[in-house]
Length: 179
Image (cartoon, rainbow, N blue to C red; front, top):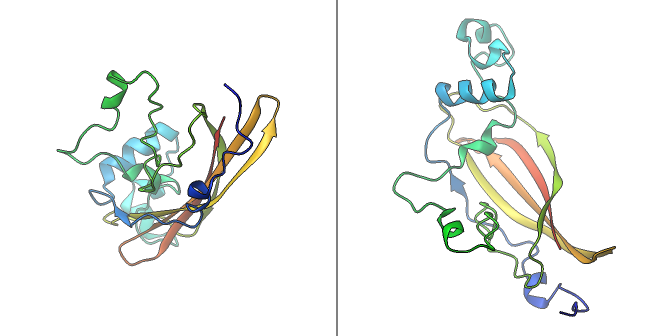
């Protein structure tokens, strides 16, 4: 198969700036989930679990670790399993197309490999117990570069996480590489 001159078609270019609808996590930030998260990241700071300790801090309450809002977006009960396609499609990459962002997939036929190109995160505020987290994503840029193996397409997605008051908790810029 010969490589096209470019993968950045008008259809792909039209996705730059496209925003997802806001997606609100199925449930609020809960202490049991924060506990499991801090065990997984091995950060036993009492600000994440000890209410008496937390009252004496600048937060005044128990908070979640900075990256916790990202894990709030799991499949809701009663909805289809997004990985079920893997049972019948050997080429399924597990990303679900828009990579769980609510964005449409970038139509890049002929580029089957999906690589994590890294993340950049700006943290503004920590989520507190009871917060309802909402995420909204957009395609910031889509461009290509030539590498040793041919053309690679870089997809830059920015996701903003807010609480129920509209306060920004964090902004994550994710680079995905297709080749």
